[in-house]
Image (cartoon, rainbow, N blue to C red; front, side):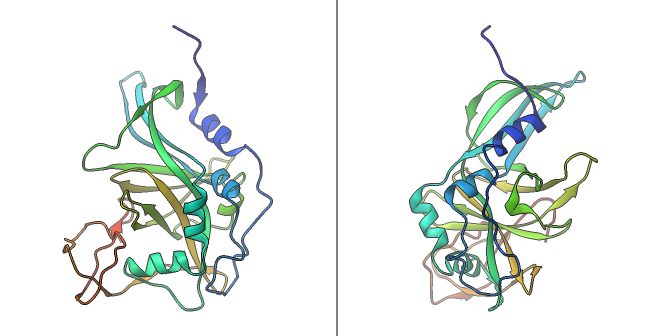
Length: 257
């Protein structure tokens, strides 16, 4: 067998994140609703895009496989779409959330995601990975970010709400609300959260700030026509009007809120 890479999950994460330390940082206490002037660059977003794991299956000896979800930089087109004035705020509002007028939607990271399956032994990955597709029905993905290296994630606390903007194949966006967990091992702080996705493509991670504080958004009724969304279905943003009903919003498996 040819030469193989041997990486621990932490080492893999650091390799993904240590391509350079971004010099830009969003001012968290900004009260403007426009997020275009202070947007990070595409490179900043790529360096701060968290990696994820799913479907880890091991035997009694800790040997098995794991699906690793990683990303490359988003396209210029996607970047421009996200960083237009109030663009992210509008996406979130159309998904059924009530964003305060004085709130600022802050980008934490973004990437164009894909998945590979690795052999693993405990927390160690082997090989170069085999590309895999998301199975029908979706899968739960645990994402991890490291504030020590991911500058844009600094300041988040255990229990803070963040919002995951996932661009679907038809160009619309779904919004997934989740809660971050702070894991401290005495070496490197880790922020983790789990969401369920049916596909992988451009994904942006954001927090909503108001008066210098991370806020959890209320849900509101939105107007829509076309396909009726059943409870628990995706809150994909579509061009809908006339019929008013409560829009279902995807929840993360680890919160249920």
